[in-house]
Image (cartoon, rainbow over all chains, first blue to last red; front, side):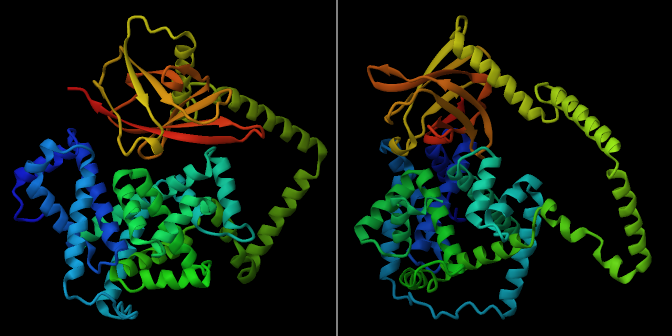
Length: 188
Length: 301
């Protein structure tokens, strides 16, 4: 939410997403993430600024739109996102970047990586030994066993399908990622 | 890994920019409408990045991937994160897998005394285990210990794993409730659920009041699959924790089609998101997942 958005508009937006405040918060985070992925996959260099733009526009319109809107609010977010993307694509910016634009030797880049690793270490330590073990065994190949064999074995041990295991591991990773983002935002 | 499925293939094509614009927009609409599909795309994207990093992509796909992922700063940051995460996790084997490294190899080489001590201990142990009588007594003790522990902790509510014991107690109550269908004195709340793929992104809401113990939810799971003999419904929460399961559920034919009906006391469901995983056991004895049914429990006003 931008600083200029009136708090009551943002309240209205949350109420539109779900009547329960906690559920609305979750939904809001989910929409932000979906928007971020949408712009990133559309090769927008700075997806966050466009995500903010979409949220800002929807928040301003919510009092007008929400009462008569049929369906999930996420559909409306997508419609606004498409418009914002089209506007961005018309702007005279350089879309393609040279391959070496991320110079991993600069001080800034090194500090960022250190901060990331530090946060990763802290967030990893917050996971239970069971979760750590599942993540390791799912992600890391330990010869002579192939990764696919290790995953089959793990799914059997946990008495779940490989599909369910795949989703579970993804959610573990997502939790760690969110924890890192929170920590890095605090430390930055 | 379901790499070979048509859906995964389509998502991969979408991610590397191989689909026409119209189809991309259709997929993006699904991503916004169906959280489960959005999650599937995230998973496939992670797998794609991993395959790229380990050189498992074909030359053509690899070139397309680079075109899409290496030119945008945000995508490159994503790739970089995946790389760092994988390097980090590779350095964190679980304790049980680290065990071989913790054996005292160094003292044996650098300290002869330590080596001798270890050898002496080994010899005593060998002497101990080489006597058949000692072995038989030890084996007997182990069996007695195992049986004791098994009978104590396997079924007891105060066993090693309280969560498991609690789950068993819930499942026993559910089996008995569903076998007798005795709901007299309870308020029945019928809930119809459709499989995720046919729910059009809608999550049915079930309003329940915390602490209300006289409410029973009558779930009706609509199914379109070929009919099997018996099904299993497993409840999982939004963190994918398994809560409880109901086995041996039959299919009923109603006016609305085929459905599976069962009863769950409302007190077992707190506000939050849930999924019911419906599965059956195939001819080879393997459990097959058919479909998921999502719903949300909200606090009733």
